[in-house]
Image (tube, rainbow, N blue to C red; front, side, top):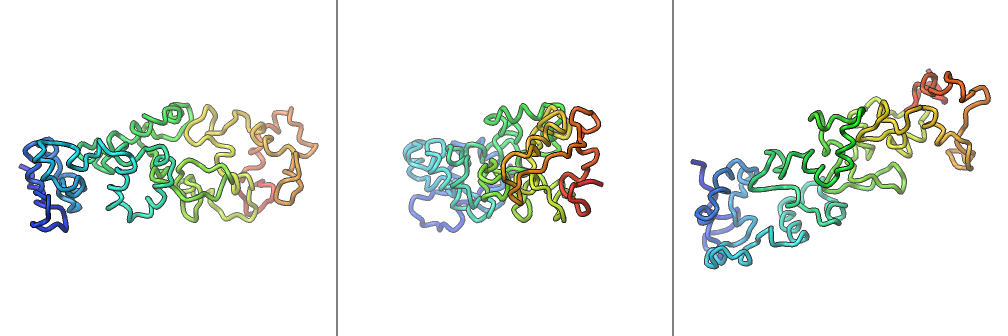
Length: 291
């Protein structure tokens, strides 16, 4: 027999109007009562139905009338978010939740979390995380089945390792093209650098494409048909997207450098740029990123 829930919500006195205590809820909701003592809300001493659903006396007297209680299934997305944030607003990880793309699309707490019957003990998710995120982001989930991909399906990592579903601060890369809920690493850097620390730098000679536009300039982060998650199968075609001499942009306003006349791009020897320019993410010894 699981331990009894708290009689009243934390901070509520016995003479509070409308509160009956959680034991009164057990008669009609035995399925919730059975496992709730394992729930993080119980462990956190929010051990009462009325702590989230409000006073239950009118609900009982109305023979289960959902309009007499805060029933999350009957509330709007905004009302649900406001109720959860009465406790869950203290974390900096949720500081941008009201401006996040999920909230703007009415995807809020109860859309992903199940308090009474969670599929995962951590975060109380309604489904396993890959299934939960994939239920909406089907095209992204399909990319994890490509020949070269991050090993999310295998359980080595998960979506929240790179993304913060509750909203993020403005990033410092990709200029006006804001990444979708990407959780920044240290110093407001890309999430990629949490694992690929050798690419962080600082370097004496920075590769502008990496430092300014970010990893997604060359790589497809979820999955790709090409080795190293590259966007193109042949290296030089990827490099020539930027190194074409067009325009007057660049760090000195003189455009992006093109290959020298000695580089015959029809010759296979010159078609794998990284054979010579091996320090392509940044170098401390050569401005052309050679050995």
